[in-house]
Image (cartoon, rainbow, N blue to C red):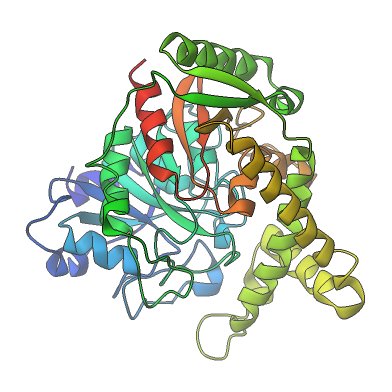
Length: 427
């Protein structure tokens, strides 16, 4: 699909908000490489030199990126064709794809419903067949949530495996860039291309080069795998149809030779409030540079309701008299969740379970309680709080709407997670 065809096809989906009309990206990419046959989209919070990089917000409606994010440089050197920047919830604040200044994104796999967020455009562009793969960012499920809703594959690597240099922050201790694709093999190929140590990013891990051979080392065999399932998952799934799909998925894994082990995550229910208390404080800190002096508009003057909510709450929690009451307790809870997941993963190769607790709501539905929206991330935030790798692979349909199986591994067990995902995909 060429650029003009993509523009015409995307009018109904609104998955891409910035196109490479002048061929700036195309002219600077390698002619050869592992990704030379692939067309990609990049989430609009990753800097692409010479292109508008607005992060879905009016705040940065005139911000032309002066440099490439490391992942963009690596895509170019791998020969990938970057078609444009994908729509997203404003500053990645959202789980539906509806808070973008550029309008909501449609779900190609379930027309009339949200695609999930915040990497809404990335997932929708892949699901619609506009691109072969896309990059998203995942702070609490922002790759995995839309991948589940749109019926595609999404992967969030271990924190530090992919450089964050050139990513517009939501919460720096939680954000991680990862691929979205139609199949695990393509996702692994893109991940292999963009991962690796980056001296420009202080959070980037320096690992043996063999670690990053995700596509080359992909082994989809499930026989002998020990996979954990937490009983607490069942308590938090609000949709009976999703529960049935996940139960069938577990049965498929067992039939393929995997051993299903019962594990316990007693503090899973506190993961969501723990996550948001961390996000509020970090997002408030990250947005102090948007004061309208150097570039863009003052964020408080032009942002949407959800962004303003997070700024105000972050400002409140950050005050000295309240930091002990809220933020420090959230950090303590984060350590508890990390320890609990580590213990659960000590006896198994990976955890498997639901990605989302409920089906995507209809576009335009008035949801006045933010906690109802936040609940989409109840199963995904633990991986970000703990820096763990986690991915989503399509598991089935409920009322014609896709839902995905989440696979979560221990720190630096990215290959194991991808292998389990690839094995399930073949069932």
